Length: 149
Ligand SMILES: [Zn+2]
Image (cartoon, rainbow, N blue to C red):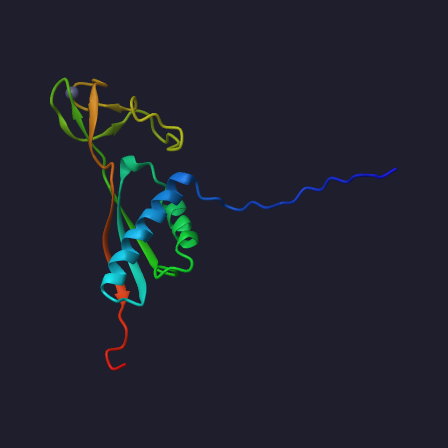
């Protein structure tokens, strides 16, 4: 009789979530396009502005960027991220500005955007997100080929 054996392999490897990964791919497409137009040979630095409501995790995004940029002009580029604060607009009292999170330390992965934002002025939940939903590539630093070549 054959004795089958089961073994457990400890991996503990971080896998970027689809959200971060597809964002990283989008960023890389954009910056490699620009870099190619300038005949750059390599992208050295990337500065991103990430809205609070994009629900992107900065560490995960950088990790995804490292994987997705392999073999592209952006491989090995240094990524810096600046967070842009979220803004809401209240439909009841017309308040427009920063949010006040209803719950503290909510896990961003399970946050339901529709009901955590309360108007800080009139306490209404009848609010709209008016800023902080986007991600921008603020600037990149590229290496150009030697002019004497
Ligand atoms: Zn209000």
